[in-house]
Image (cartoon, rainbow, N blue to C red; front, side):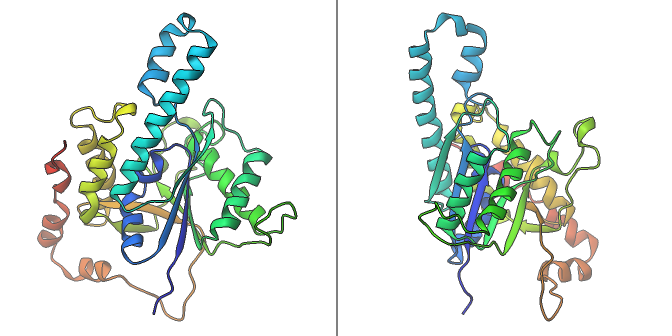
Length: 293
């Protein structure tokens, strides 16, 4: 019997926990694996419709006390949206480290906190962001990936102040990739884009992805057509690369080892099916027909 896997997702912002790899996590949970998702930041400054829009133009009209109260309220709204969205995929262990997303840097405090989380969860697999996204040093996703890698290294050694005790070593790391990871979007990103070396077929879960993204009203993701278009231009785009309707793409950090070289059934099908059959399969538009409340 196959041993169940423990997975830890380390995300930069709350919604990243499911919109990057929700379909993949659903499949893992379906087969009995456990999943813990953690967001480093509140995601309020760059996404929230109140904080990022209202305060941007009218900050001087509010007292410090009013601002603090609104931030607390908006954090509760966003977190509840994310918890509800994650529940669509069967994810019930969702955590928030509550860092302000004004400035995110690689720092000892956050590395130690993540290392302790790794020792607590004891994951076999860590899923996080591509550490070279955009300019690599001011991009929240990239910095999150760098923090995760540093924490993985730290967790592999003993921390005598950690009540969880000894070291925990990760078996594998997967970078959850979005389109900006796989194509240069700015001059400072040229030469640092990721190569997807593993695709997960999420055609059966695309309805959940569309619905989950639409639930993020605090980020204005409930705009008509937005979650559908996101599914097509992201999961649909990746799916088209490997003759699937929808896929999530990953860069796997460590070369895998075995006694034989595995070939997926999908790869065998691509090699044997005629082109019309492949294109008809890849042309599925299930995401566009998802009904939203």
